[in-house]
Image (cartoon, rainbow, N blue to C red; front, side, top):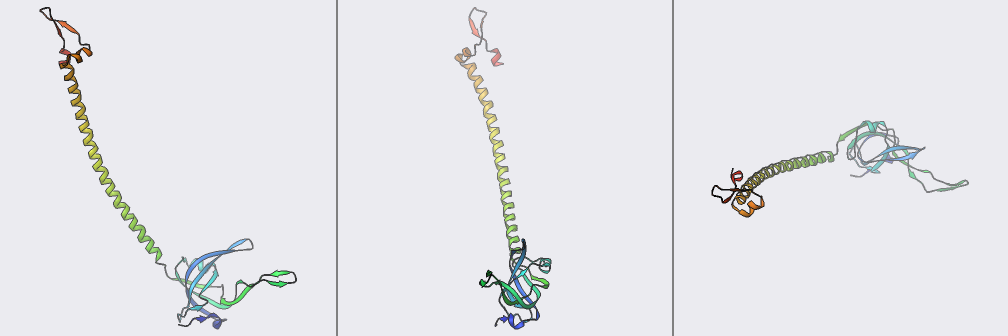
Length: 208
């Protein structure tokens, strides 16, 4: 389909559609003027692509109130008229070089009836990705908790085995001290005299 040249609609008011391309701004009188670029412009009734295919607008109330985001498709009403766009080459004047805005036929800034007709799919795709990541992380958490429970059970079993080994070691140590005279001497076990005049070691306290 042949593009619709805006110059052929000069002075008329029409409905157009387009896609929110990006947001921007420029300085004017020390303040930032917010702007929005609409690309893939089409005539709403005929669906003809418009030439030029994109246009920058000041971000006035109708745009802001529509709650649009980058990638959304919008429908709006605009008047085709003389507009300023870009800058002409510097012209030489008696007082020096002068920069002038380039005059073209375009879409006027007094936009009205802005409607978002289609929301960008990227939002739903992003939400799906985040939900999938959340499910994956929840599964990882469950698996980690299962591993932690198994490790805790293994730790308790090892602690039980260690306690049993320590008890057996204490018992073995006591028996060795009782049965080994050198160990008894090292412990300075007192000697007692027997009724026949001989000497014998007293293990009563240990055997008890």
